[in-house]
Image 1 (tube, helix red, strand yellow):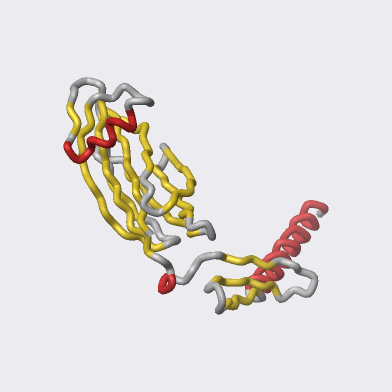
Image 2 (cartoon, helix red, strand yellow; image 1 turned 90 degrees about the horizontal axis):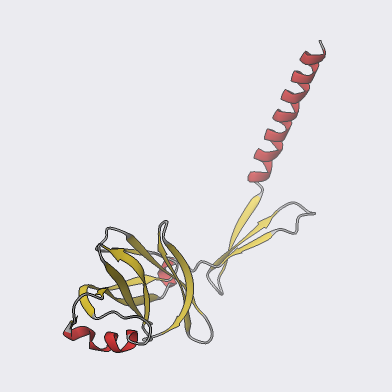
Length: 182
């Protein structure tokens, strides 16, 4: 008899919790702020001070960022530098002993702030570029992600290229030269 009372009480509490949960889901109200194109969520509960500001711009107002990405193969085996990569060798001489630089692919694409663009690398890894925002000092907040390998957030200026490396492609290394333009 005692077990039956516990089961009935548990079931009643579960039903009450479900009813309260379903009522509070319907009480949230979404309003748009016209000034910054962000969404503000307010709770109707009187004692609740919860408000969440989602800083996503609407797709129609999002600025496009153009990226120029050079996918470069680097190794220490031969003495060869592609004619389009002469400046690369000088930049790497102080850091690594690479002597061979080959341009594998060159990508130019546009992506809006808040959206992602993916590129397939020669080693069949996928890299995602997600520009987050541009701050007051005209610096781009950028997320670069290769699933299970890399997830990095960084800030960069317009037309200032940077390198991201470390991936292997057979015996060679893959180096990315990334130049945002906004």
